[in-house]
Length: 311
Image 1 (cartoon, rainbow, N blue to C red):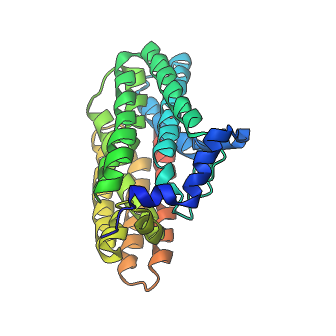
Image 2: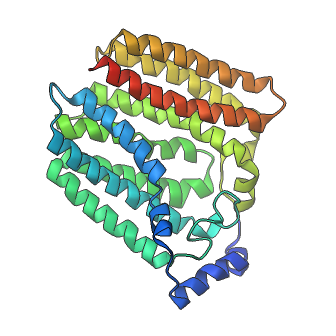
């Protein structure tokens, strides 16, 4: 198992002293640094799935005002989560090549400023979502709680189940979009939640494989860093097979048509084949990269097929 980084070692690390010195000296980062802690890529991808929920819930023309307000509130909630994630993980991020140049571990931003950003975004986002309806606001806060407290503060550092548990937060946006328009959660909303919940597991496990050594050094309890690639590839394949089955159930509910059914079936079979090939490759990192990229294509096409079918 990966050995957690002790508090003493973290505090004595030069990168950590750089963070502390930036606080005391009042160093201010560039505007790009403040934007970076909101993780725009994550915001955009989550709003894409949010719109899927809106699209399926709308009966007739889209209620543009409600949709835009709900998207704004959701974006603020997501940015709150990413800021708080950056703030909490800044101690261990400095041990990973992928994250050590981020604004906080590199000492370009004051941690307290990022913390305040996270709190303010969370409050503003909740207020905006309450103006849409209470249900959407509650879902947003549940997603924020799972991402910040359950995933970032707790399971990411203590158990390899963190990817599964943390998937709750990433599965909230389409359900929020659906609730913003319909004002309720029905079987369709839960199906959207289920699809995004399962999709995240092979997606993030493939990413974790690519950075397994770094996660091990930092002390994050990611499955490939703790139990190795063979176990991780088995889980990736299982989640993928289950994803194919769950995704086509949206057709059984009558929410989508043949374009979605055929497209997602073909895409899903391709995803299974890609992940089966992981057992026959000698280059595990190359496999992880292919699986990760395919997962992104899968998510984009999932959105596209739904939009086409419901035009």
